[in-house]
Amino acid sequence: MRGARLLRPARLLVLLASGAGVVYLTGRFDLVRAADDDRGMEPFVAPGSRFFVDRRPGLLEREDIVAVEFGAGRVAAARVAALPGDVVSEEEGTIFVNGARRRPLLSREDLPAGRVPNGELLVVRDRPEGSPVPTCERVPIERIRGLVVLAWPF
Image (cartoon, rainbow, N blue to C red; front, side, top):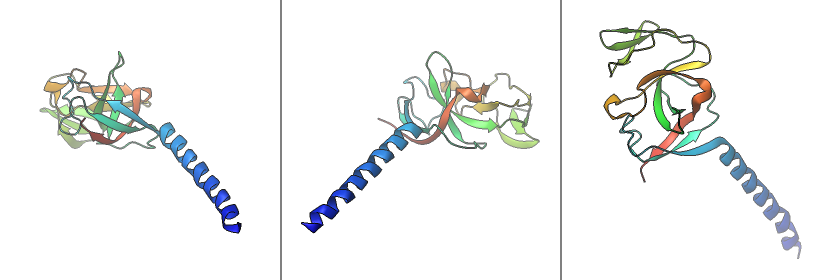
């Protein structure tokens, strides 16, 4: 009888811990589906694939892949090219951030050169020819859904 009495509090503790874990995970992570016509971040995010997004990533860094709201309910993955306060320039088809060469400018779209204002990020897409959304754009941090932590096709 003593063992059964001791087991009840342990079960209750496991149940409470499991419930708290589920609440934490559902509050922190989001599951987002890429559009079927979006090839802008292949091969990392394939068209129609799903990806987990950490809604509270902390400080973002250059080259992080984030989920961005591009309007009309469209969410797409993009790469962080520059952070608030960074100075962005373009020279012979290459993006420079704070004077350091970062990546080729893959499309002929206008690069928003100059200092990235506070509250904004410069995001780029890896494949402009397959992207129905802008491939290089400054976006307000409010439009960043979070950091992409895992992506897989279904």
